[in-house]
Amino acid sequence: MKRIGAIIAILLLIGLYVTTLICAFIGTEFANSMLMASIFGTIFIPVLLYTYLFLIKAFNKDKASDKDESN
Image 1 (spheres, rainbow, N blue to C red):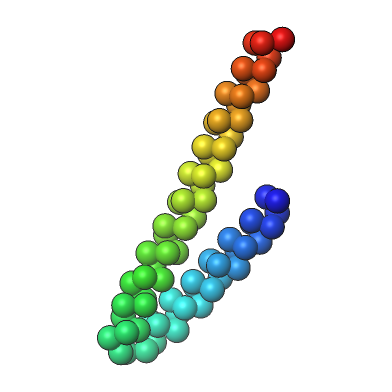
Image 2 (tube, rainbow, N blue to C red):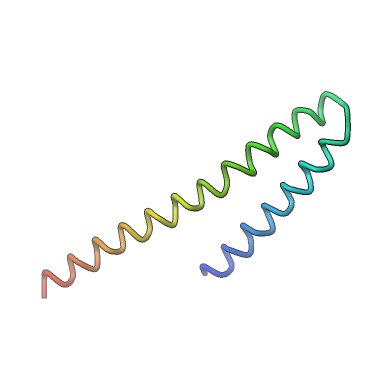
């Protein structure tokens, strides 16, 4: 499950990088809006994924320690 999520995240980021590059060369108003959205996604998605993985590890450690204490 983690591997599939990682592959999806990589493909999404590659798509954002390509979109950012294309929008940077197009001079229309729509392209400027898409460029800003793409740059935001390029920064926000990895931060969100890192936070998500950090929280999963933190909550799993708490559950593992609860199981150890109950035994």
